[in-house]
Length: 128
Image 1 (cartoon, helix red, strand yellow):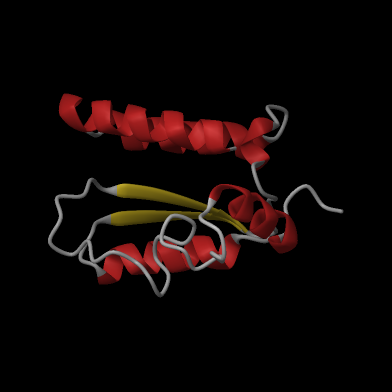
Image 2: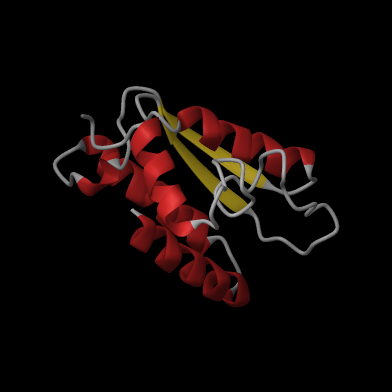
C-alpha cells in the first residue's frame, strides 16, 4: 500500500472526526461542500504546494481554487513529477528548490504576517 492513499487518509480522518462523519466534514475538507464562508474574513495570503504524483493533488488544487473564489490571495506552486511530502528528501533538488520558494514567500511578509505563518507552518509540519 502506498504511503498516502485515499483509503488511508479516509481512515485517518475517521479516527479524529465525529462519529458518522466522512471526508466532506468541514475539518477534513475545508473547501468542500460544508465549507465555512471565508469571503468576509481577514485571511493571510496562502502558499499551496501540489505534487503531481500526490493522491491528494486534486484536493489541494480545489483548496487553492476555493481560496481564490473566496477572494483570498493565494499562490500555487506545482511540482508535476513529485510525490506527497517530497520535500522531506533533502537529496532531491526539488526539495531544496521548494525550501527556497517557501523562504522567499515568508521573507516578503511583514513581521505580524510571519508570526501567523510560523504558527500555520508548525501545524502543517506536525500534520505531515
